[in-house]
Length: 257
Image 1 (cartoon, helix red, strand yellow):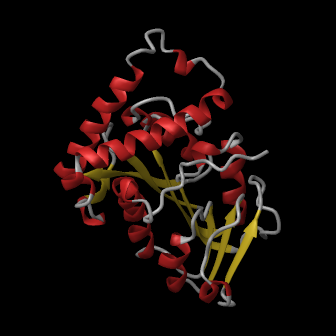
Image 2 (cartoon, rainbow, N blue to C red):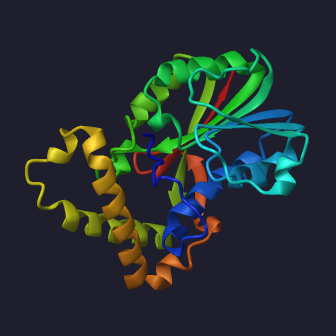
């Protein structure tokens, strides 16, 4: 049985507003960069399609789960959805895509090198990859839904292997966002302080997924209950994208074939 990760953030849950807005800054930036035929790998709940499809000539969404998109979008002949496990990118022709968008996905992919090889294959010469993934240095605990996370050096190294030109930017939060981050950090510390032997980093990922999901939901809702003034107020404009540093929250990578 495939368990759908609670990693999928939704604007429908108020306790997820801070992380949802953090994801949306990437889509706002992507809207300025896309053109032509766009492939989104990991289109999740479909809000990326809503944000970006209008800026493309053709939009192809790929996800391993069914995506909740409106009938209006489904009826748009310029939008295609494929349910598939990736890699590979089956039925996507080589040199056919102008822009690949893949946000918060590569950390879930076992074969991350094959994943980038396939993206490179389907991009047209001069085509661009827009990719986000968490900065390992800023993670508060082990996330068992992630196969791996990347340090700044690792992020640069894996992109360098496949793309001749790339830029690793970072997603940053303002003081309000970082106040929430620090409160979250303290809350996570209270939960994990009993793990004196750091067993979370040695136990199998499958064993930790459900406990992590339960505690993650509980933690976010408790943070909202205790910090309504922060959680309710954070907007996408409280985030920015600029040159990456060790303390960026996510990487926002732009790579060119």
